Length: 288
Image (cartoon, rainbow, N blue to C red; front, side, top):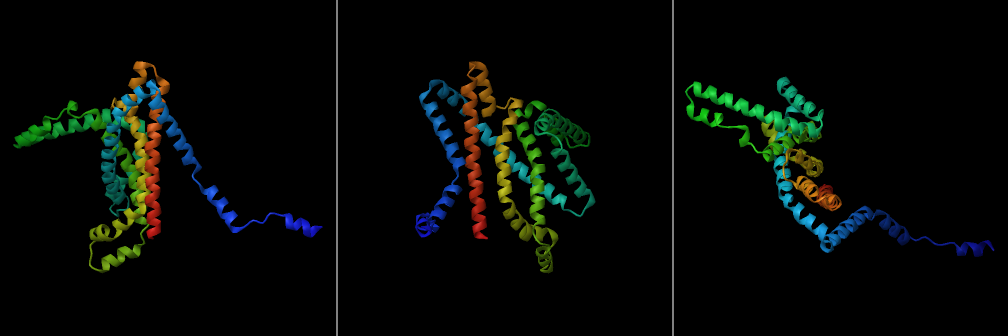
């Protein structure tokens, strides 16, 4: 009898286990997001109210994309300089970089956007004007006129938003660059110096190329985060998709249509970018 019962027990094969693992590892979350996106595309194409909201809101997409790209490129420069400053043995440079990073990371992004755009930029303009007057008093009238001619009106809110995002994210990227540089073993620097390279040459030709390769996934994740945080510039009346959506909702009282379209647009952008970052990370691991 026991032998008969044993023959009735299911036999689990290797193929069954592998198929279960494949089912378990499938990106079900991605399928759910795709279903949401397909559903929203369907209602946009079939519902007049959603279609009008989409047509109106997508006009701000160009501002969102260009603001994010420009801000991130400038933030990369700030972050690299501050990251190099953080590992510098020069006490003054190290403390200036540390001060910048700690100040920025200790203040909410929204507050920083207000402060940089409405306080920092006017102070910078006043400084340029003062420098221009000093140049004029010292016989450099041509350059003096250039600096004294700058006014607050010359710097648009879009430009101020780009500066604010760049300065803010520069501090976060600084820590990424610092960690990436410190992840390279000291033997690499010592080997480069033994070949006759200066510290700057060793950093430029040996350390930084390897460090940047190591931090590419982290930089990609911060770029995705900046895409989302770019919505905060709408508080400066920059006509990105968030601001345009608010204007449309306020003028038509179609809050549901406006913010559903807006949310799905951000979701689509960030998911696509996240998948690209994962692809780059996977290729880097394969290459290694």
